[in-house]
Length: 176
Image 1 (cartoon, one colour):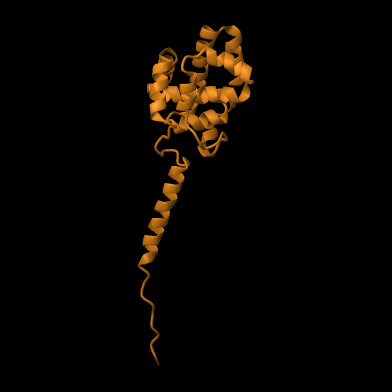
Image 2 (image 1 turned 30 degrees about the vertical axis):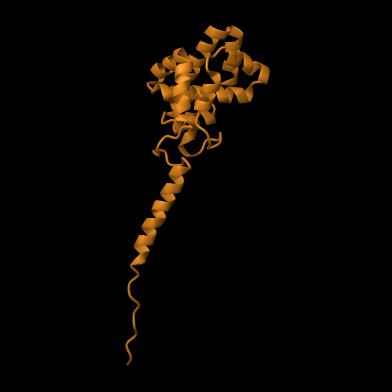
């Protein structure tokens, strides 16, 4: 009886599997889909410039959130960007006039990833009082999404103090 030849074991399968897993990790990390991926910021130079352009606000935010000034500037920019999308141009101009370096703060906000909550980003929830986009932005900055609940009152108080009660109310309403 003739012996059947068995095929040699496939050595490439484990290698291909490892490479595939590594490739998937790289894709998810680059897309910000892995929670512990490195924080992504639009422009660290913009964050540094924003921190210098609006030192009182950034310092107060940094202290309240326990973050770096660059993270605080990015967080402020993300929240102001969200308010800008909800307010009329005239209303946002009033808010913008109350905040030194508003353009730089907006540029310091992280970009990409949309405004929807994905994966664990929905943890923030309505109880924290921030929009899902804030959770995404805070995560990209390397901050807990829960810190948006601490940042919003600091920002609204700053705007109320520098722009008046009506301007503060505009911002507070946009960040609900």
